[in-house]
Structure formats: C-alpha cells, structure tokens
Image (cartoon, rainbow over all chains, first blue to last red; front, top):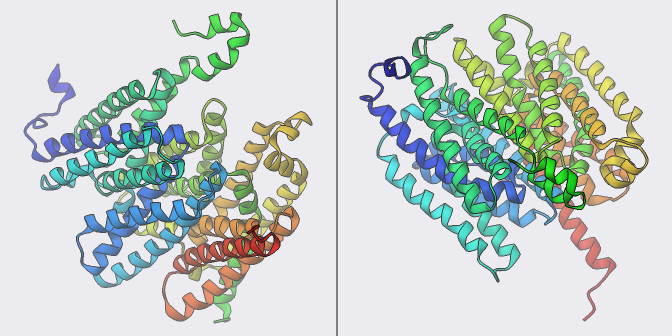
Length: 287
Length: 269
C-alpha cells in the first residue's frame, strides 16, 4: 500500500531529505509571521518583499557577492523604504508597497538584462519566480534556521505592550522582510507568498486567538509542504511531459483548497456582529 | 528613433500609458494596488496554457485575467481583499508553473511576458491595443460617477444603491480587459509600474478627482515617452526606466505636498 504512495527511493534520496527539512522550517516560520501579516492586512507587502529580495539576489549575482546577502539586504532595504514613505492608513500602505515594488522590479529588469548579457541565463527570471526546492544544498540549512528564529522573534517583541506603534510597524516589516527573503530565495516568490498567507488566513478562520492560529497555520503549512513534495516526487512519470510536476503547483493547490474548505465553517466575524440577534448566533456558532 | 518600426512602439506605448493612467488612478484611489499587480502577473499563466494548446496568447491572457478578476471579487465577498488577492494570485501562478513544466521551450517567452518586448511591436498588434484602450476608457467613462462615489465614499455609495461588490467586480474586469492586450507588448511589470507610480504621484499633487486623473495620464505619458527615448539610446530595458521614474515622480510629489503644506500653515511656534 505504502509503495503506491511513496515511489521507490523516496526515503533514500538526499535532495528529498533536505527539501523536507527546509520546507518544514519555512512553513513554520511563514505561519508565525503570516498570522501577523494577515491580521495587519499586509499581504501585499508580504508578497512584494519576496519579489524585491529576489531582485537583490540577481543584483548580488551580478556583482559577484554571495546571493544570500543580496536577498537580505534588498528585502530589508525595501521594507525600510516602504515604512518611510508609507502612510499609516491601509490604502496608503498598499500604494507605498506598489511604488517600491515597481521601482524594485525595474531594477530586476536591469539586473537580468545585464546578467544575461554576460552569462546568457535565459531561465533566470523563471527560477527567481518559481525557485526550486529540490536544488537546495544542505549547507544553507543552518543559516536558514538561525534567520528563521530571528525573524519569528520580533513579532513577540511587537506584541509587548508599551511599544510605540510606528516602531512596532517598522520592526514587523523587517521581520517580514527577513522571513520572506529567505523563503523566496529557496522556494521562489510564488510558494513563499502562498505559505505566508494561505495557512495563516485559513487558521484565523478556524482558530481562536493568534497563538492557536499560529499552531494551526504551522500544521497546515507543514502538511501542505510535505504532501506537495511527496506528490512532486511521485509525479516524475506522470503525463504529459514525464519530467515531474512542479512542487509549487501541488503546495499552492493544497493551501488554496484548505482555505476554500474553511469557507464551509461559519465566519467568526459574523458571530461577533450577530451578537444582537441570538437566533442567528445559535445558527452560526460552530458545532 | 521615429522610423517605421519605432512608430508602432510610440503609438502602442502612448495608448498603454493612457489606459494605465486612467485605470491606475482608480486602482490607487480604491486601494486595489495588489490586484493591479496580481492580474497582469497572474495572467501570464494563461499565455503559458495557450502556448501549450497552440492557441493565440491573447486568448489565454484574456481568459486568465478575467478568471483572476472573478476569483478576487468572489473570494473578497467572504474574506479580506488582500488575502483574496494573494490566494487568487498564487493559484494562477501555480497553474502557470504547471503549464510551463509541461511545455518544453517557454523560459524565453516567460521573460518577454514579464518584461515586455516594446521595441518589437508589429503593426498588427497596434490596432487591438488602441481599440481595447478605447473600450476600457469608454467603460470607465460610462461608470465614472458610481465608480468614483464607491471609491471615495463607499458608505454614501451604498446608501445611494451602488453595490460596492458589483462596482469592484466591474472595475476588476476593466482592469483585466486592459491587461490582456497590453501585457504581451509592454510586459506585466511595465503595466504595473505605469498604473501605480503616476497615479500615486497625481493623487499626492491634487485632491480634485478629474484633475488628478488627467495628471495621472500626463505623468504616465511623460514617463513612458522619456523611458522609450532613453531606453532606445542606452539599450537598457524600458521597465527599468519606467519603474524608477514612477517612484521618482511619487517621491517628488510627496515632497511637494509636504513643502506646500508647510507654506500654507506654518507651525505655531
């Protein structure tokens, strides 16, 4: 039975071990940071920082610095810039994010153009968007774990009372930048956005309180990543191309599917607003 | 620089700048910046699917950008707009990744869809862009008043019987329409930069809606024309100049507003 689920060689494969380990770390970090991102309504910033840090990666590649630093520096710089020009209202914040993202993607176009002139890597833009979880070397794992811990620390600081709102916003954006930059470099900006927003949004619908939501989100994220990796490994002989379906497709589908399933449960907000009418509350409260 | 082939580029870019200036103004006003990023970028999956089936890329782009608009509007009914946009967007890109993995030689085309091929516009591509631009602008003019009302004062609009959801859907569909024809020519990146930068700058310069919209179109035109001229001379990608100029215009406009306010009301010392 198990042989049909796990293709032979799954458990012995080195890249699969690393992918599972890294995927777990990223899924957990993204869940913790993601809950705050969704509560604060900063999904766009979460996605944009991933895109922008990949710009830093291509820039670092161009000047010959380690790409890791490029990702981090660009992500943090973009976060600082967004905070600087961002108005505090939500609409203004999204516009600031959009302006910074437009400028950053412009730089990416330049870096890719200059990069392809010298090395002719036409697939560069594609790798930047979609990444590849199976080509991680095990030496990146310790660095990833350290930074993951660092980035999930600061929401705790932010949650502490008596901290000025502006500083909390800036600190959170930095944490978001570090977390997203790391996951974007490794699994691509698409999957990093999916893991950041999807599990957290689902968890916030079904769990009460941010801490429980984080636990639920981490569970969903890790499960989706593992199942996605297993399916991608299995899909190697699937039609039509027989080269394997991408991990990102499986993980994204699982995460969005989870979110849609959470629609079946009644919304918590509706319960709160329905407090006036006890009848509807009876109907709406989850069994 | 103004020879036959380049003439197509100038016409197409002008049409794109006008479309982007008008739709971008509403995107910024409504706070749908994320959707303005998600729809053009996510629509690329449609082009990948169309090339897989051997269809015209326009068909794929149109189907996916409309599907994206419907997805965002549909999910927004019962969740936060930014979460709805993010999830629709990653789903579209996930499907795009799948399509690309099925086809064999797509990387180069993906690059051109993201960053555009504005210098290779053929005469046949100019007409659809101009027609489509006219259609989206007519659509916006037709629903100008309710759209403006629901963007600026959602509560008042709802009280007057303008459904915010229907308005959001209508607006996203116009954006999808504008996107599907312009993306193959100028790229998803350029379309996004042109929608946000000039509109945000215009909004900072004036509070009057009509003036802001015209200003947004004017800044978009200046950005794209300068961008093409410089890009033609230097050979560097157009997206780079447009992206940076959009941000620069925005920063100048913000600085201007701060200075103007300081002159108007000097702080009581």
